[in-house]
Length: 110
Length: 109
Image (cartoon, rainbow over all chains, first blue to last red; front, side):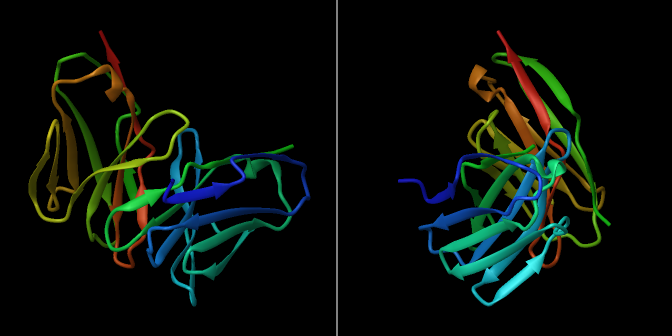
């Protein structure tokens, strides 16, 4: 079984829709992260959380929000999706150093 | 601010050695990471350097010079399966990772 799972794996939506991407982990890590990846730009940090009561903005948080429902769950929401949010989204977890990434969610906003 | 530079693409021959460079300018430094990412897949951890010097792990080695803001990833005995994108990432104080855009490595037979 995968240690870090993301749902859905693929999603096509329309401009203005609310979208939620979910991440779950069985690694027992406190730290969780959301990144987006765009061609030529690499991975950019959206939000991160070091425990259930801790939420921090990353490099590109505008237009996104997150919820840390439990140690194992960290969800990312797009309140009103726009086309330039089309990207590959990764969730990651860590204890101290190495980050473990989920399989990614490919989101297309039309 | 943070700035991480690595070459966009490299090509090497199966069985050869390739060195992928990474230079960085960050407001704080708390470690440098290398990840491998095959097309359409998640990044996977390769190496971590926090002190100057060389870390060796099988066919892969990573070097760090903090005074020069420089790291490289060395891949020996290249195999076709090493064709992937290699991501350099710097951790600043606060435990956030900043990634470079990645280097696409193509291994040819």
